[in-house]
Amino acid sequence: MSSGLNVGTDITLEDIQAAIKQLWNLGLFSDIKVILDRTTQQGVYLTIKVEEYPRLEKVLIEGNKKIKKEKLLEKLGFYQGQILSAGKIAEGKKRLKEEYAEKGFILADINTEVYDSEREGMAVLNIAIDEGKKVQIERIRFFGNTVFRDKKLRKQLDDTKENRWWGGGDFEKDKYRKDKEKVLEFYRNDGYRDAEIVKDS
Image (spheres, rainbow, N blue to C red):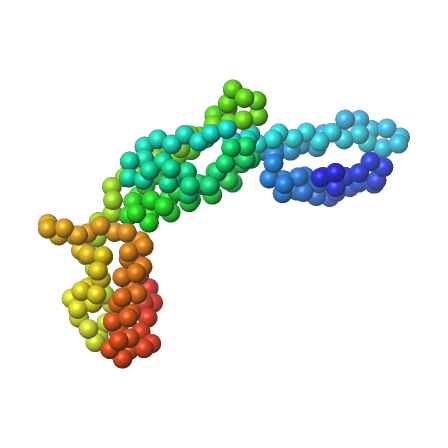
């Protein structure tokens, strides 16, 4: 059986602890208890009591305005009938926060709540999103550049611009990554082959 405990074998406290750990590792149960039912001359009678995680019936998403529900569900990667453990939910939240950060909504707050479904053993996952304001770039500064001035390096950034009254300022991670490569390409084209960005924030 999955616990590793077998009828007729000698067991120790360590064996019971190992059995509980083995069951935990299956990722199916929210609670596991090993109960001593009774002791006889032949040995002990144990009951393993488990509480299963519910299975997902559906996902409800509210508060999303900047990213479509279909896109968020795709990033979440959940499917009907899957085990809905606390770990799985935490992983899903992380993926959604990363998606918002990619779009410049670094301050997005995501809360989840699990509701029992009318169907036994099933649950509804509700995801409430507070997107917050899109982060704006107030200023772009360079450190360690002795050959080119900040102004010259800022010009290499096509999509990462300081916030000005006439436009610019939106921060998007994907575009920022590409713009950093353009700065390095500018250095290398001018003969600085070993140029690198050692840190950014």
